[in-house]
Image (cartoon, rainbow, N blue to C red):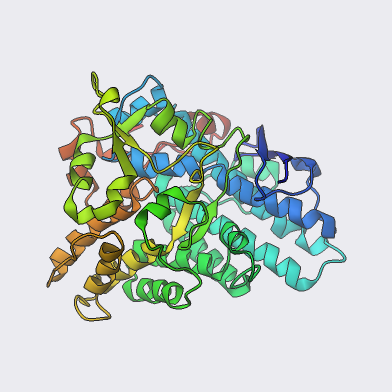
Length: 464
């Protein structure tokens, strides 16, 4: 088993140097030992390709937890239970521009974009490397940039469109319209799809899930089209992923939350067991926050929805202990993310079940309800896997309502809920009923105050 480290000193949008150390004793995302400064980041020959690629994926990994905080802690899945201000703000729905989780998400998104831009700017200088290898690295940069901007646009609204690594340019860049950012997302996913391989290694399934493939780009586009309301395109792209059979639904839902790189995983970010950003150990680590410190716990309304016969085995997402039941603690715990020594601390970005749900919703929106090519068939694929009673609906309204609940059962604490409620226009109705503190301004997160102080051309979101 390898025991290697790589450290990257790269710049966030304000281009303040931030040191992030990566470590692991698993054979994942591990290049030879190397220390890289952003100004000395090298991409000139074959020995430079893997370290830069690893840096790119490590940057994506660095905002995995923060995306789940945004997607599932902002809305109605959690209630505050601890002492950390950042999580209390999310739990009580009183988010401020000083929340460091927002700055973590913002900074690491732009770190990813920075490295992708660095690849674009320098790939032409690389010698003794084939054009296919160059194209593959650029395609991965396209994919990671697309995913980063997708999360940025739906988390913060209008955001800077950073297309260079030039410090002076980026220090004064203003926000671009969300529509322009999303057009870039589509362009980048399409470019990635053209050049990425179907698989990196026919004999190494893990490798094919931790580096972007064509199915990862298809999954990204399927989600993009769903959010954009392009139903036919969403259905087609999800179908392409399902039909090529490079992924398969696990026989048990429990395997999804207890296994890294399981059979249905399309793309996930991997964590070692000594890294400071590991979800089991850090102050933003999912296991530490959800299980160790219990800073947030499943909300009472979420528990009531999940503990339902229709959820089937997906109730394994949470567990109950009377030992924790005291004061405001309801005794429930999210168990989807383990400790560094357990086999379930990775964060899944795309998996096959989501593709079934995307296709079901896209089909329902087109009036395709029943039959083998209807929404009901896709929902029942997941109900059957979860050993839950099969669904039964005959009209579009019931189909969409069932699919929304099915997404709660299947995808909760994978970072979808806030984004789902926003794109379906249900955010204010759901959240006003959930919390008296809810304000419409929380449909987007605030631009971090540190970024506002550094870049005077940034304008804050309304209400913050």
